[in-house]
Structures are given as structure tokens and as C-alpha cells.
Image (cartoon, rainbow, N blue to C red):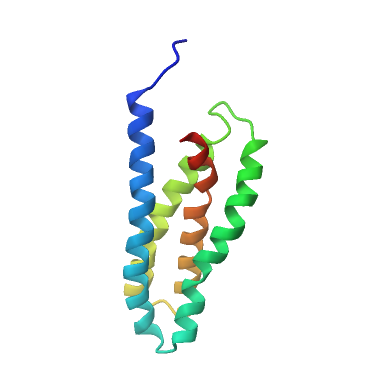
Length: 130
């Protein structure tokens, strides 16, 4: 088997990195105005948006450790990247969908929290492949 750079892998990693950065930027610029429709409390909005920092502190460490001991025919990291990236995309769309459907604040918060979890579920694995 020939070792070296594979254009497809490089493209996939670049696209994933772009999507991850774009997802977080879109989230902050998008979620705050939606939260403002739910509540005028700066404390509540800040508390919900701070979930990203909490997830970013805990999840990569735990799932990074898990992926180091994970074995599959697709490798140790690829399943985490595929699942986390795919689900993060779905939950990014669900943020706006839950708002337009009139979901209560707690459901909107749950969707945002799951989005953060999914975005951070593959950070360690993604960085390890770079």
C-alpha cells in the first residue's frame, strides 16, 4: 500500500475544518438573536451560550480518550468524526427549526446543547488527524 498524501483525505479534512469554524461562527451570530426572542434576561442568554465553553472543556477530553482505545474497521477516529460531524450538521439545522416551530425555551436550549456536544465530539479526533 502506497503511503503519502491523498487528495480526498486532505479535501475532507479541510472541508470539515471549514464547516466546524463556520458552524461555531454561525451559531454565535444566529443563536443569540433567537435567544433574545425567548428571554430578555442577559443572565439566561449568557448561561445558555456558555454551555459551549463547558462542552468544549469536558467533551474533547472524554471522547478523545475513548477514541484512543476504540477499534473498528474504519479506524479509531473516523467513526467519531463522521458521526459527530453529521449530527452537528443536523442539530445546527434543528436550532432554527425548533425556534420556528415555537418550541419552549428548554427544548431550544436542549437542541443548542446537543449541537455543542456534537461539535465537540470530534474535535480531538479531527485535530489528531491534522
